[in-house]
Image 1 (cartoon, rainbow, N blue to C red):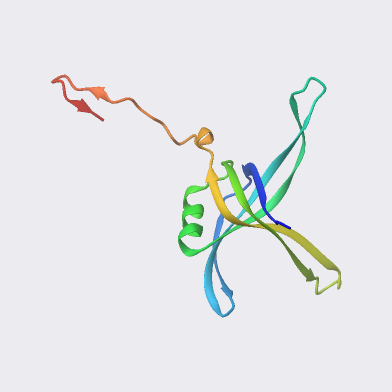
Image 2: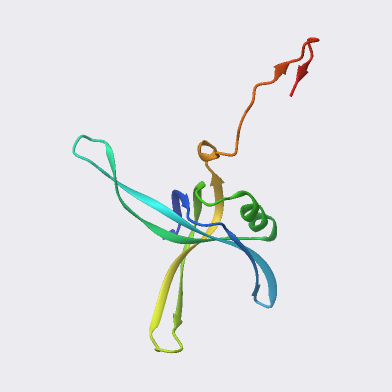
Length: 133
């Protein structure tokens, strides 16, 4: 049985870059929260939004985590492929058991259609015939 999740959603807050201990070794992880829309088919054969859900996403590895923390911004549209995992803990004050579902990303892609910062300007011709930026 495969445990692969694929989804496209919007980043809800700035990613956080952390250094954590894993098996007595320091590792970097970028943590981000993504809202994934759910759609269903409407009566006319089109799609309509039918809610959605938030999912915590972890991007591991020194290079990848740092790139995600630097490039991904709040509101960015991302496509994520990874494996779902569950964490469990018991609250110290109440003794109540808690569970959380999260995603360990294998790949994360930015949607270029949503990059508001990307402004492409045509090159202008200089008066002497040379191209200038």
